[in-house]
Image: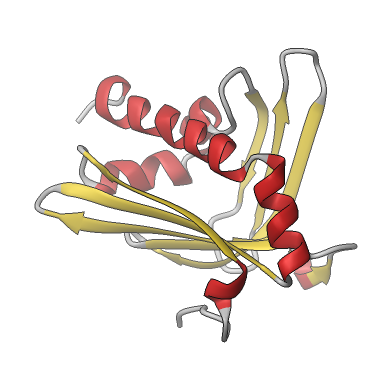
Length: 161
């Protein structure tokens, strides 16, 4: 099963980068809570809470904390997990498929093998142009880009083989 709503690109923000690490390692950094907590969020943020239930419908919850102590909670569920190729999650639902108060986005993260390196692509699909623009104005490219920089550092210099 693969999720791609009609017209997704119309309300899509994305980042892509070739990472000098095998996709199994990059996928691990995405699916092990202790590893994800080390890189999740823009520079200066920490992630003191990271919970994952790695199955379709399983919980994906993080709380990012800014240097001033402000907290930014996020919660959703996994829609698809194909190791080590793809992760799809959304904030449209909580555990038990309970609808959230306001669906904002669905994230699609792919890990393509390119001669032992990983072509990493993260997409944020939004239900409408207003939410997409709001996410962009919130600093999507800077924030997700800084998170990606931290992920690259983790998988290329801090994680063993």
